[in-house]
Image (cartoon, rainbow, N blue to C red; front, side, top):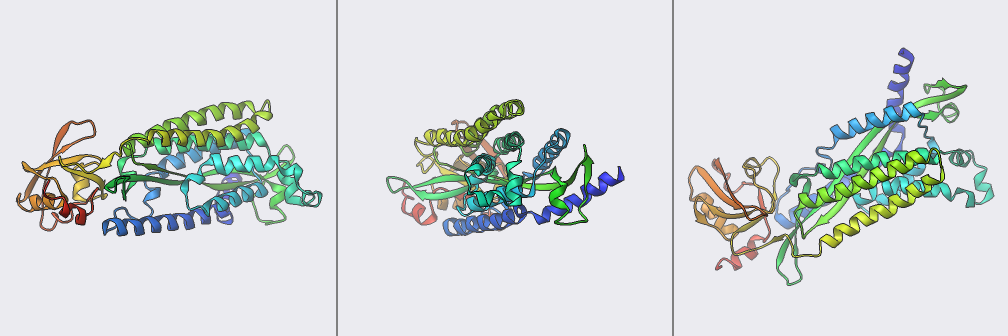
Length: 395
């Protein structure tokens, strides 16, 4: 038992030898920096903190990694160094797009599986390389199963998306008027343990822990697999759109899981998993774009002030205000522009009561004691910029 513990402990430290971790860190820094730069340009302030794309993902990802580890070690899931670097190379290539949507396992592992199918067509002198020989021995059903399990995690990540997990943006509509949109960007890492052939380890590092199974030697390695998703919402509620995409992704993952289990008996089914993962992922987002062909959800209206975004942990967030809601009155004072809204806040004393109307047309009241300076730091982002609001104040 002690030997197993040492193998797992040392195998955990070997995750730093894999490119996944470094690619994820660099990508998260770039995505976060670009988002903050855009927020400052649009709203004059940072709306979300750095690395908010990771927020709320770790607990479920660690649980997913534990489940995959138990399944993988139970059935003998084996990954090789050549395959891990193949998957990492594809992850690096899709990172060049700057889009987290390409971090779906449908793409990273789907393309990796298809790449394995193309190996027989490589030049003969390439096939003789030891790493190529190892890639030829990669179990396609194992890759298909790993893809489907990680896609289930992607589906859950989308289903758990809340209004505080999508990022507001301001843009011009077809008629030149300001409209709002939300961009969902979610990123996580699923660390799971897997067996790795000992024959590949020993020449690389003699100190790597190995175990013996039926005469073959294996080590244990912690693989920090990176997942991501990105989508744009303009014609729907951001939360509703995210959960719809999540349900469709989850259903696709269940179908792929059934096929991947069947591929252990009929290996050709693993090819169907790779192809269906790519086609299904595109179909899910094509359906999403089709649902977006409607009137923008975040638009200005003479009936009130539309909330485009809420800064996390701000007074507005503590009051329970939600993106998409329409602020109609502040302490019974009608407000129709941002300027009128803040003027009403200054004239209402220490206690503020706000009447809002949700996306279903039902009104509700939120209230909170206000302190000095908080009128200007309420934490709300509106559809129209202040310069535009001053020009339509006569409504």
